[in-house]
Structures are given as structure tokens and as C-alpha cells.
Length: 316
Image 1: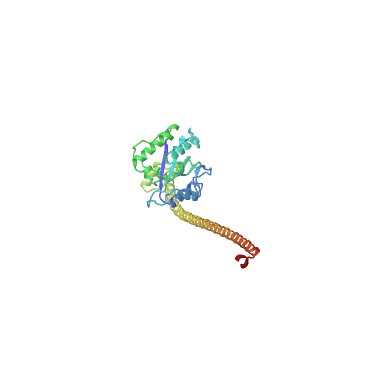
Image 2: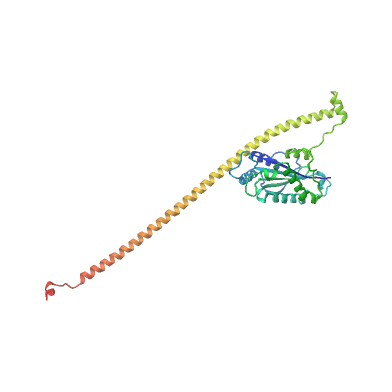
């Protein structure tokens, strides 16, 4: 019976977000990929965009070591999908409903990215969410804190997303080990090595058959490859984190320059207003002086043209 599958991973650093994003956006080599393009559903389209989108949502003040992003991986048992003979299409339906469930759970603004991978053995939805609560707190605990919340999340997801497509829920309360997202990625494409009991029996007495030797060689190669990949991934993550920080510093510098330019333009406008006021005052004073001069000239002219009055005339 096929099962609905929901996994979560807590990301506490921007480096971790970038590293996860590089896999999601196929910016690193993915050996198990057949090259089929992913189906983009929302948000960022590259690891750098993802890092910037997460940083943009975070409050300035937050607890050290706080979870800054939750990575969701949503899929179902392989046999549930059409490519393996099941009834569910590889896209649409189930994943559309799962995306709607995420929006109802976290709010559309907090879903910074969602992609459906179709290039691996089993189709799966990968979504990145900033764990902001309704009152603006950064708190993954409100969503993933403790066994009870995790059980309720699985039950709610199955009710809204799994059950309508005939998928079963895992047995509630069962002691099955929880797989990390990275472990589940490996399980999606894992192939059981071909080895018989006779090979194991021979190995028990010190005889290594070809099948057993191949198994050991494969295990050794996988370990070596994993170590090399971890080192390469860590190096790329550090580089990407440095690039994101540098880009944000440049953007902040640009913003500061723009703010200074705006202040300078305002100051220039203020000085222009002062100039206009002074010019108006000068023009007003000039007109007043001209009127005063004209008035003085008229008075002087009248005084000059007035008849002379002698003392004799005054004495009569």
C-alpha cells in the first residue's frame, strides 16, 4: 500500500541554505538525475536568490542558533506514481494540494521557494519556508517543536493531501526511525546490491567471492566519494555565503549613496527656495525705492513751482 511521505529539515545558517539550494537547483552534479527539467512552483530560482530571499524575511534581532529556514520534502511511495504503474500523475494533483497545504500552514509570503523534481526515480516536491509566526516571531518550535507537533503535522498532511489520493499514513506512534532529508534523497535512488547468502557464508570463513569483493569495493568507493563531495560542498557553501554577504554589503552601500543623493537634492531645493525668496525681496525693495523716488520728485517739483510769498505781502 503506497504511503504519503513528508520530511523536514531545519536549516540554521545561510551556508546551510545555500548548500541545500545548490542541490535543489542542480547547480552541482547530481549523478542520479536523468536531466528532466524541474517544475518551478514559487519563489527563488537559484541558490543565491534563495539565500537572499531567506535573509530578506528574517527579523533583524533573532536568537543565536535559531532555525532560519525549514526545508520540506514531500513525495509518496514510488508505486503511487504513474511512472511506476500507479494512479497519481507525476505533476499537478498531489503536489498542488501539498503546496496549498504549505501555504495554509505557513502563509504564502513565508514560502520562499518550491520546486518539483522530476529527474530522479521518484517525483518529489522541495519547499523552503521561513518559520515566522502570525505575530512575526521567528520560531521553528511553533511548527516542529516536539513529538506531538510532528505527529499532528503528519496526521494533518495525510488528511488533506494523502487521503484524497488513496495514500496511507504511517502508523502513528510506531518506533520507526526518522530519516533526514539527505538520507531520504539517497533512499529515493538506492539500489540493493546483489549478494547471495552463500557469498556471506563464504565471507564468514574468510573466503571473499567476486560478489562480496564487489560489494566491499562499492562501499569503499561510496565512502570516499561522500567525503570528497562533503569537502567540495563545504567549500562551495563558504564561497556562496561570502558572495551573498558581499552582494548585500554592496547593496547597502548603494542604498546609502542613494539616500545621501536624495538628501543633497532636498538641500539644493531648499537653497533654490531661499534664492527665490531673496530675489523676490530685492525686487520688492527696488519697486518701493522707485516709488519713493518718484514721490519725492513730485513733491520737489510742486515746491519749486509754487508762487513766492514776500514779507511785504504777509504784512498787509
